[in-house]
Length: 324
Image 1 (tube, rainbow, N blue to C red):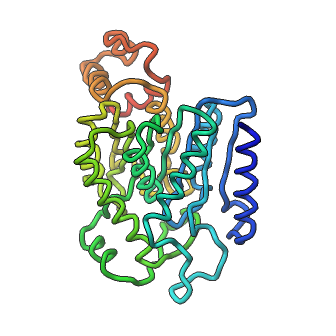
Image 2: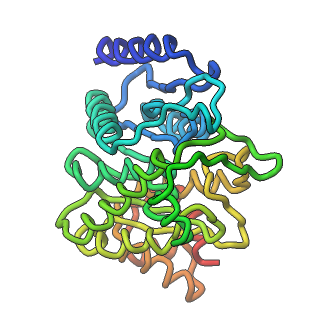
Image 3: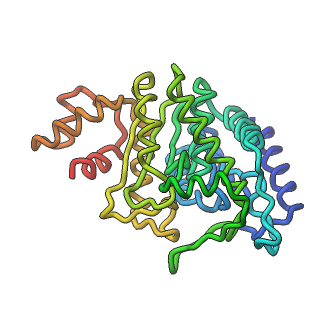
């Protein structure tokens, strides 16, 4: 098993070294348990970013005993003097990402049976596509701010129609991973993929369990679209959860690192681990919350519902926040 993954890792690094990359930190990242593990995380970074964006949560899951794969998305992380006259070589076809996601899902499966897929923004959209199309291969999906539609319908129309170059505007002092801009058709790929996912969720009868994480302060994506994914899927996949950071926490769209502006990364990680390592339904989670709102402690609520042994130690942190 490890000879196989070692070959894949080496081939990936050789391929990326020949590109060349923007920096030594821009390439795919792999955290592999030396003694083996049946648990694997496959994380896809955000649109125009690099895998470095997932190192914080990746290291947390690695410390919890998971293999962690963080591959560089196609066309990303490549060195160049990119601008509107020379835009970065980002894919403009969904199939490129579909093939990429399926390849790495198969790699993850070769490492262990308990495969978690996750991502941020466009990477989260790809993870959602896998969760709907390959549900039997995936134990859990962690969808952080999936790009299913933008936060503004006029912006969405702009993305659909115009083929211009767009430069990101980062918050002062915020870290930025990857490219500073892109051609609009490259983003349109994920907008179209998001529309397909929402339509498929309405018609499907099975999906991998999903945690969907939103933020009331997200100015890039629409949390209502996240609910439009959650609402139909929960009807046939009861182990889906939904969590939205309250606006007072000021959690941005790029929520995976403190450097990008999320001061509550530890809470985000606790929520992700609580979901990944618990085996309870959304209805049971709501029951815990309702009992706690009556003044009962978390520990007593778990006892009343006979959920001992089915919940992660991290769930108590999540429930305290929800209860507030």
